[in-house]
Amino acid sequence: MRNSRFAVLIAVVWMISLSLVAQNTASPKAEERITKEVRHELVMLPYLTVFDNLAYKVNGYDVTLMGQVVNPTLKSDAQNVVKRIEGVERVDNQIEVLPTSPMDDGLRRQLYRAIYGYPALQRYAMPVIKPIRIIVKNGNVSLEGVVDSESDKNMAGIRAKSVPGIFSVTNNLNVAKS
View 1 (cartoon, rainbow, N blue to C red):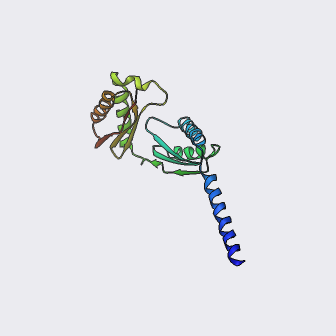
View 2: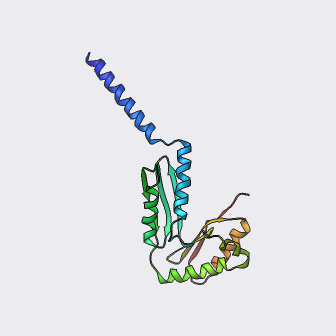
View 3: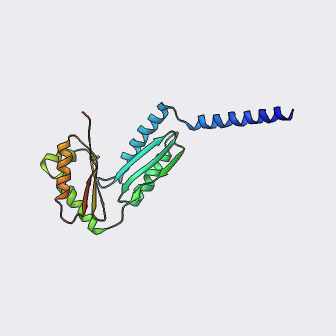
C-alpha cells in the first residue's frame, strides 16, 4: 500500500513537471511573432540613433537584449517596451551603456561624416534607421549592421580608419544576401 502511494506521488510530480516544461516552451509561431514585435518595438524607440546598436535573442517566451547605447535611458526604454509585449515572460537586459566622453562624441560626428558623407555610401544615409551603426567606446570603433556588398563593407571600414584620433576599427558589417 505504501509503495503504491509513493509510486502515484512520483507519477504526479513527474506529470506536473512535464506540464510546466511544456508551458514554458513557445511554439515556433509564437516565437516568430515575439521576434517580430521585439524588432518593431526596438526600432520605434524615439532616442535610437546611428550611434546605438540594439540586438536581441528570443528563446521561447524569454528575450535577451544586447548591444551598446550612448543614452542610458535607451537601455531602460528598450527593456520596458519589450516586457510589455504579449507573451514575453522575462527580459534579460545585457545592453551596455557606453561611457560619456567628449572625445568619443567628436569621433562619432567625424565618423558619421566620413561614412555617410562619402558619395559611394550616401544611399545608406537615406533610411530613417541607418543600416550602418557606428559604435565608439574609448576611441575604439565598431561598425555594425548590414550593407549590400562586400565592397561597401570594405569602403565603410576604410572610411572609418581614415578618421584621425581612432585607436582601432572593427568592421562587423554583414553583407545582405541577394
